[in-house]
Amino acid sequence: SRFDSRISNVQLVLTDENGPRGGLDKACRVNVSVNRASDVVVSDRDADLASCISRVADRVGRSVARSIDRSRNFDRTKISAINHS
Image (cartoon, rainbow, N blue to C red; front, side, top):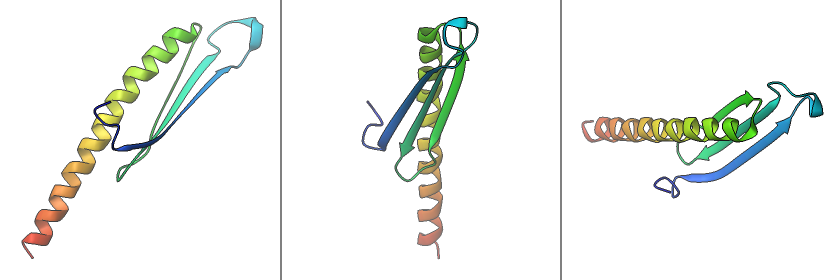
């Protein structure tokens, strides 16, 4: 929620690739569109869908924070360079 003003779209894709055969076949992919920053895409596989979703959610949260932080640092550097010209 702290980044909701910077996020324009979130896409969640869940698949069961092997059907009833089991194994590490549950896949979760999240694509987050971040305003003025690179999109964040995180995916993982697991035998348990809930574990897979939880792991991806943790990773996507950290990745979005890093992407926004990098974009803020870039914006400050860009503004600083313009002001010193």
